[in-house]
Length: 108
Image 1: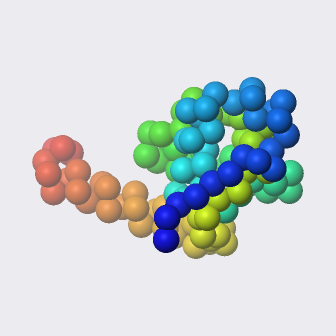
Image 2: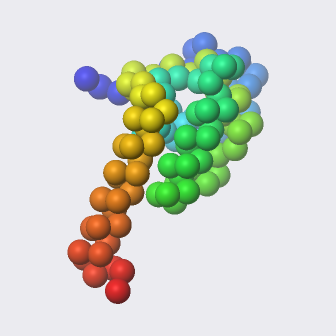
């Protein structure tokens, strides 16, 4: 199934405040963090997950809570993960990355 996303339900003025490249990053972040969209109710949880994932994998540094708030209404085809499943997936990915770094000799 192809990944799709839409900002048609976002507030027009708010979404214009988010650079199109950052809109793309936020949409693709939905896949990584296991949330299919951004609502007023979940935007802080979205930001928390995005920041955690970003800190571990050195991505999403330029995105702010204000950017996430401005993207309320974003809808994607990403599957939803409950918080515990997101944490398990993220830690597993991080452990895999570190093991690969060790195996490739990037970590002495």
